[in-house]
Image 1 (tube, rainbow, N blue to C red):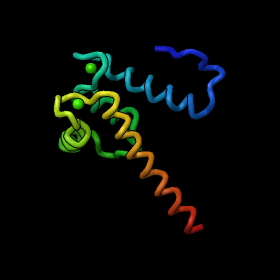
Image 2 (spheres, rainbow, N blue to C red):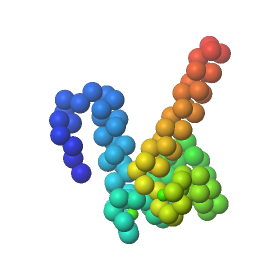
Image 3 (spheres, protein in one colour):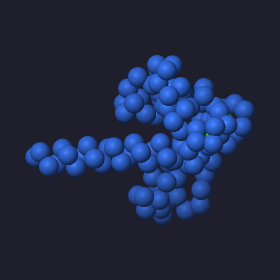
Image 4 (cartoon, rainbow, N blue to C red):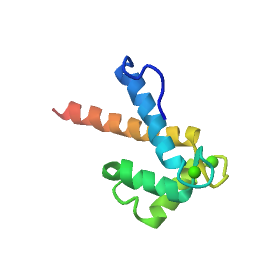
Length: 104
Ligand SMILES: [Ca+2]
Ligand SMILES: [Ca+2]
């Protein structure tokens, strides 16, 4: 999947495109092309967020993340639900960063 003008894109625009591309890289593996099944979510979490989420290999952790994210309860994670996860993780990273800076 490619989006227009990626060469001229700003850093933030690139980050947005990467989030879209990353989602579609996993969502297209099985079932609905535009949503993540539990297996696709697990693969995405372990491959892309391994260092942040640590033990996402753990079946219960995946079930919990799936349950938390699947706000419309259809058993799949759509792009809106995915972006909420990324947003929440980014907020947590920012909090960590601010705290770390305050201690310097
Ligand atoms: Ca899918
Ligand atoms: Ca859902």
